[in-house]
Image 1 (spheres, rainbow, N blue to C red):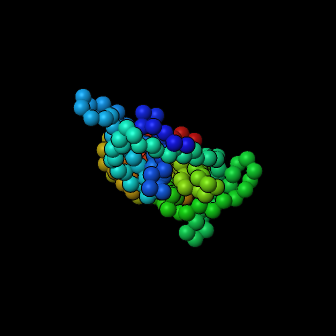
Image 2 (image 1 turned 180 degrees about the vertical axis):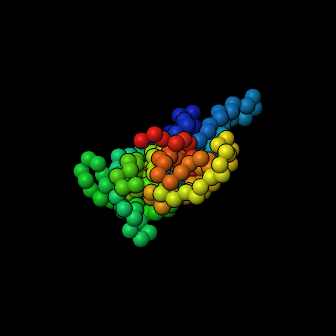
Image 3 (image 1 turned 90 degrees about the vertical axis):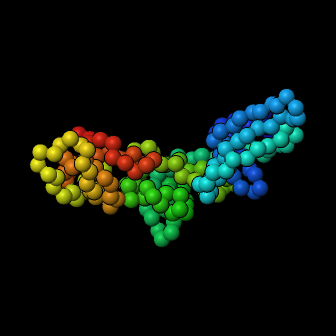
Length: 188
């Protein structure tokens, strides 16, 4: 669908030079002299890189609608991850590149949202948090419970994360999957 520059909004998906971009920021500029234009910050969906681009008033942009499906993580198979559609139980392979950094924190049946363009998966949105049990942790120093000192622990899925030193083996922790950081200890 073709759009004029005044119709471009944050969150839209645009096809520019045969690549898909998510609109991160827009600024409409109407100078006293000359024609109006729009400054945008765009994020390449596939390569996860950002660009800034200016479009003139006369330009038409192509908007793209993505199909988003609720799926569950099943297992890793080589360089692909297998997800299952929760509606029809179809299993779909997706490139490991989309979840490589969070894969060590994903349990089987973790719910995700997979974006499709022309029936091809182009992105995976995991949940914001994972709640996992600590399977290995070295003992912390006695008396140091301020939470300022950190140590590395291993969680049940094999991932490693920095946590306060009062966390022990067997504790359950909440991890923010957006930046892979410790959030809090969770009571069972």
